[in-house]
Length: 416
Image (cartoon, rainbow, N blue to C red; front, top):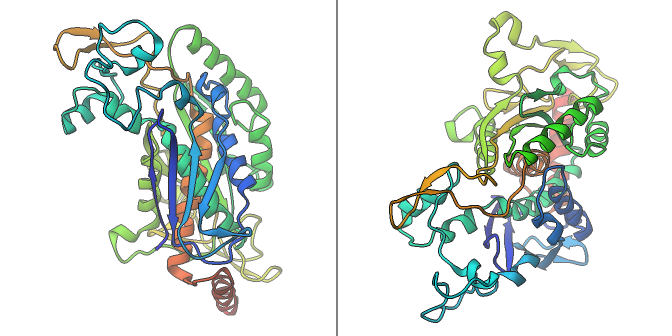
């Protein structure tokens, strides 16, 4: 079973992640993981924290001479900003007067003071009620989206595994505030090629593949920043080269679309997930929604077990590459809606956690918009779930065994 665990707080010394279940012999490049971490830090609308951090991974175990060993892979990402938070985030008990409100006005003392004004839209109040902390920083430090850097590192390993099998992943922004952009279901086949889609998205400061719409999105972020407000939006991730038969229709918890929804909903701020045509498709009649099945030359982007020979294909992909919880061989298409950030420079009304008196919500250093960065986290989420499904179906303790099993399945499909 492919799995991972992360640990660490937003302003703690580091984030750590342990990945278990990768086959032995998978080529791993620290520089490739760092590229994904850097992509996560980029995107118009990010705040000053991303100017402080220079995320780089240290691989502490499970990889030797560039290849996985089949043992757990341990990685750490240092938080450079921890240098300003060493006392506030110390693992050791503080002296009795440390962090009290009357201690002084120095920045170090301010950071050590309890957070007692929960922010609407954040985990502050719910976490405090759950665990009974007097200081809500105990909650917000772990609930912070900073943790997604560790998920991106884990996803980079899963992505590398999929690349060995010819599966490619790309993502882009299809909505920001009330501005919408076309998704892959509305694009020509050559436009939705992952390499081309990635190229166009990465040329945009907001990772939108359409230049004119990208410009409008940048202007919307500028307006939100001037107003002390934040913006949410929608991002889309697509995987091509996915063979049919991943996932299962036999149990509710094995359906791949359900597992994808869980992985995307677990990204901080995500409030909705669609596969394929999603909510818009449910407004169509069945005769207009479902993808017809044909047999003949396979269009670009769809799985074909033997190039140049006819096989099953669909002229459309409103199902998003999944039917009955199982992949169909078409590109897997997932969209996620991410809400505006909860930290506002002009805070909303709240209540003091300890005194119960009305108060403005706490203000933490934050971003204006994270939708472009969420694309990278979404790519990691899709890569992770697909890698799990691949290993569940094909097995293999080593990469060579996995590749042989996938090739055998391809030949079996070609024979049909």
